[in-house]
Every structure is written in structure tokens, then in C-alpha cells.
Length: 346
Image (tube, rainbow, N blue to C red):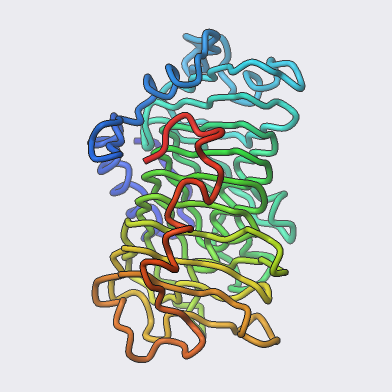
């Protein structure tokens, strides 16, 4: 196990535990009642890929650097290419830009890890990994920004692990580690299946149209906070936008206390459906503290959530408990037009 700089002993411990769990189960993702296994061979077959570039930190591949492998692909590439990142800890910043149709395949989260350490006044600049090309698929990789925790709610504490700002991007069985602003899911149609996401403040944020299927969300206790942080901060700004964050199944747990979401825009839309919520969720569930306007257009909602954090008494009065009929359009893969671009959906 590689030695990480100690930004926080708890962060390191939970990172190592998650690696242990993921190594046991990295080989397959069951979906559609067990009829489809969304592992890397299935994804490769569905995408019809013939070309593979191998990255091996020990020098047994085509490249030792992930970025060098990506840069070897022509700009505006039009054919799917596998960049197979073999097991190891890769200490580098990685950016996919102007190079679509890349399948970035790891050997399993916790086995293939991309790590950097940077905080910044600019969220994008701090990101360990940036997906800025359309049609990017990622499988079995851990992403971490291990920047030491700074002052809560200041630029010294914005440390993004992954930034996604392109259409048709999907992550299968990946992990995302940081504290403040872990996953900057900014724009485009996105899909995250069976992913682990860890943080304490606004750690899933942006303006995208996204389905998180069966996520594992771990909340870190942050004793610097005078108020609770939030899992999500969605920034939908008008009624015409189709954007939103939809969490289907999965579980939320951890050691800290958080809101499910805070309204970052006047039309913020976040839905948790059939999700297990542990006692880490505070009673109001939702907050509009960063939005000064009316709450009438905010959609912060739940459907059939369960667990000690799902108690309806005390919920924010403007939050919603949806009916089956109301939630159905958001539970379909059609919400992100997934049948037109995803190789596999669960």
C-alpha cells in the first residue's frame, strides 16, 4: 500500500477501508436483475473497440503516464480507443480535452488510482482529473485530491477530485475522494453506476443532468463547520433546463452530519429515490441557505427513502415527497437519453 501524505488520519483510514472493500468486488456490476454484467469486457464488447493503449507505471506498457497515453490519441478522434491503466498509484493530473471516444479502463478501484494534491480559488484548476471531451467512459479507477484541509468555505479548501464538463460521460465502479467539492459534475448528460463518493462540504456540485445509480456516499465529519455541510449543491438556474441530480438506490452513511442538498440556483433539482439514509442526514434534510430567493421553484425531493435519516417529520417545509407517478420520468434512463449513448445501463 503506498504512503499518502497525511491531510487527515481519518480521510486516509476511510480511503484504505474503501480500497479493501472495492478490491473484493471490483470485477462485476450486476444490473437489470442480473441479466447484464457491466464489467470491462462487456463495455469493450458493446463499444466495439479494437485499439488498446496500455499504461503501466512499472514500464511494461506503451506509456508510464496516463496523460502521455491520452495525448497520443489524435484530437477530434472519431473511433473508440481503450486506454488501459494497469494497477498502480499514478501521481499526476489527467485531462481529456478535444479527444472524444476514449474508454479509460482501470484494473478496479483501489487497484488503479490517480492522485494529486492541490487546492485553489479555481475549482477547475484544482481537479485531479478533468473530462472535457464528449463520449468518455471510465471504469474501475479511484480518483483522489489529497490536498490538506484548509479553512472551511474558503478558497484554501476547494480541492476537486474530478471535473466533468462534457456531454455523454459515464463512470462505472469508480471512487472519488476529497473533502470540499469532491465531484464537480458541471454540464452535460452523465451516468455514474456503483460509484463511491466521499466528502464533507458540497461534494457533488454543478449543473449537469445526471443519474447516480446505486451510489455509495460516505460523509466525513468536519469539526471546522459551524453549520452542517451538504452532499449536493445543484445550480439549475431556469425552468427550461432539463438538468438535475437523480440518485437511485444506494446508501448514504458516514461519521458527519449533512444535508442531502442545498440550493445553489433558483431552480435547483435533486432527487433521492429508494436510497438508504443513515443518521448522518440532519432532520430538515435540505437547505436553501446559499439561495436568497423564493423556494417555490426548487425541487429538493425524496421518493421511498428509508433508514434513520429518512424520517419525514422535521423536513424542510418546501422539500417534496414524490409519488410514484411524479418520480417515474426521473428514474428512467431516458432522463439522460441513455439508450442513445450508454453502452450498458443498470
